[in-house]
Image 1 (cartoon, rainbow, N blue to C red):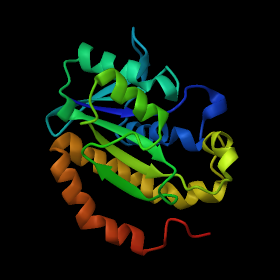
Image 2 (cartoon, helix red, strand yellow; image 1 turned 135 degrees about the vertical axis):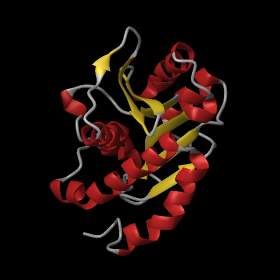
Image 3 (cartoon, rainbow, N blue to C red; image 1 turned 90 degrees about the vertical axis):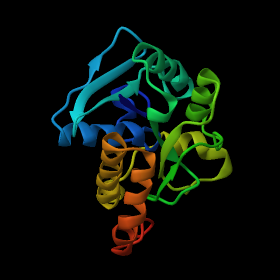
Length: 200
């Protein structure tokens, strides 16, 4: 079974904020496949499904971003998920708005959600889909920036990149991280050639 964890904060006040792009992408995925999130007995909401005979879970931690690792460990232990079958979807201030990067492993890159997952799983060898939220902020305003909501024009701009992220996750679920990377290599040039992610 595959597990896809979106990093974000639960609650209406955090809806459509930059830090919640992991939740937003999972919501698009769930809507496309007619899935619904429900509470678990642990620190996460989840939706389960089947894609091309591959079972999967979509997971939204209820612990807030900084403690995402608590939910990640619970998912791993309760559903007997292999680390190689885990994908984390996370916002990235180091990438321009809408830019996607896939990594098989790596450091937390300064992201507290990834830092928490690495700490609780005791490894950084889990896959992640990093989605750029831009970095149009002064150094002292990082917290305010990541918790700010996407503007209407930004949401319109990134819709196709969110949809592309959903397709990439589908490849991961149906096959594996290498097929996901192949899919990215094959189609990303077309996706980004139409207009640049940081276009006005």
